[in-house]
Image (cartoon, rainbow, N blue to C red; front, side, top):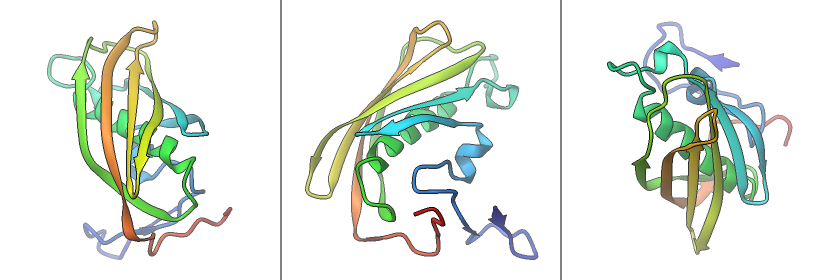
Amino acid sequence: MEERNEEGATGPHLFAMEGWISTAPFERLLHMEIVDAADGRAVLTMPFLVDLAQGAGIMHGGALLSLADTAVVMAIKSLLPPGTHFGTISADARFLYPVRQGTVIAKAQVTGQQDRTLTGEATVFNEEGRPVMEFLATFRIARDSAIRQITFPDE
């Protein structure tokens, strides 16, 4: 799916996504899976692999943040027309409990929209259903909102 230039340089990279609501290369690297994304809500999962561990052997906070952010993004995408360009402009996380094993699940929802600004929240749970992180974020839709150089063949 990904196209690389001959030298394997650091960018820019061109790639085709499977669809508007699908995982990008970074999200696939973290083994994220979209369980559901509709009506301003999304559920994603991610396994705790050794590559996602920090020095003390628990899941790295950056991996949890990536999952929560991506879950909110998918909730937003479920409301916007395919090809709308937007990005995270602020994020706040509260870590509640360490993840030592298993698969984590992020449940996200869009909580508001004013003009080009959207807000969303996610809670990440461990396998036992215990909340391990709360996440709040703000996103902005670009003025020129068409995504360039990315195609969505199924749309």
